[in-house]
Amino acid sequence: DARVTQTPRHKVTEMGQEVTMRCQPILGHNTVFWYRQTMMQGLELLAYFRNRAPLDDSGMPKDRFSAEMPDATLATLKIQPSEPRDSAVYFCASGLVNAFWEQFFGPGTRLTVL
Amino acid sequence: AQSVTQPDIHITVSEGASLELRCNYSYGATPYLFWYVQSPGQGLQLLLKYFSGDTLVQGIKGFEAEFKRSQSSFNLRKPSVHWSDAAEYFCAVGTGNQFYFGTGTSLTVIP
Picture 1 (spheres, rainbow over the protein chains, first blue to last red):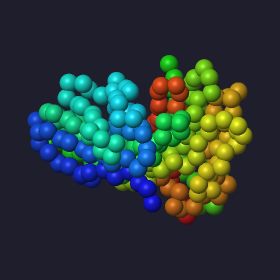
Picture 2 (cartoon, chains in turn purple, brown; picture 1 turned 60 degrees about the vertical axis):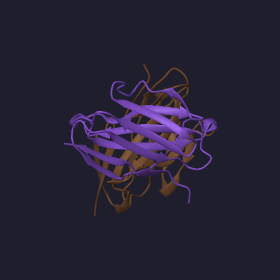
Picture 3 (cartoon, rainbow over the protein chains, first blue to last red; picture 1 turned 180 degrees about the horizontal axis):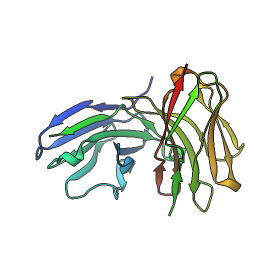
Picture 4 (tube, chains in turn purple, brown; picture 1 turned 45 degrees about the vertical axis):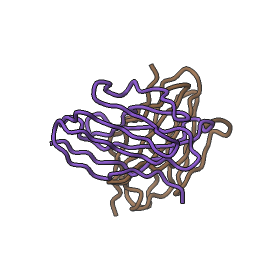
């Protein structure tokens, strides 16, 4: 049963600390998406990659957020320094380039910044 | 600008009753359309999708959706709701280089 995995599932940290969230896309998928979900803003697309290359990160605060794909099996989302307003659930999703935006979601990382 | 609207924030239905969740989009061409479901504390699961062809699409868990170009709508339906269908439902729209989720509709199912 192919699934997107995300680690950690929960993260509590203090303001100013660095946070790294990891995502393993479904094997063979060549697009990866990062989303943030909050009660106030709903689901926001932060960034997405195609064949490991960043295509769009316009939804991401550039000054503190960064997203990378070191290899085809790992995507990372980093926040440095973290702030309380970053508290949210962060979802990773993966899909295929020729599948017209069809995405499969991971279980999410719940981040709390104190 | 492209957008997707789910006009109903919250809907309550009785178990066994029919369900229709509304979704409208704003886009010049026919977009790619999706419905996702999210149970509490879980990720999003794809219910169904429309890319082209038959405007009535069948999905998992007994759901279906109909694309109506004239109304720019892609409403989700289920003939008989089960208590396990209580969840948050998201409509989503994909275009050439953008993807948008609606704000979601929370479904409560009462016995």
